[in-house]
Image 1: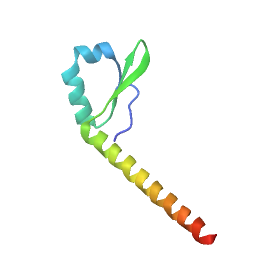
Image 2: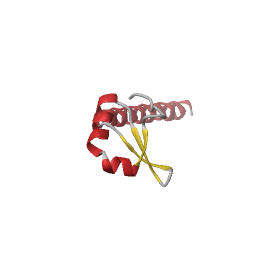
Image 3: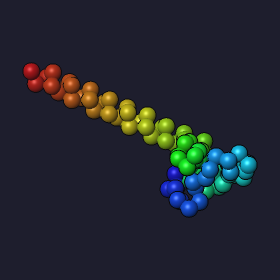
Image 4: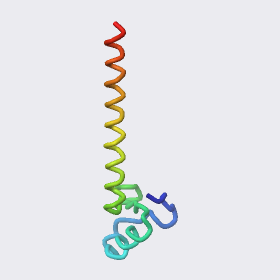
Length: 81
């Protein structure tokens, strides 16, 4: 995933409503997320589905590795007793 360009990738929700199709195309083209603001505050992030799936897969893999590591540590503690 590309990093956020602070000048181009933060837009008000009203602009997104008015230009939804072009902003979705922009996200798909650049691979960068689009941060939408409401009342001047960050509200939601629009992300290309491939980028989202990649993030979810990475998180799941990391969680699985962490669980496996915790399991090995627990087994090591049990064996040392």
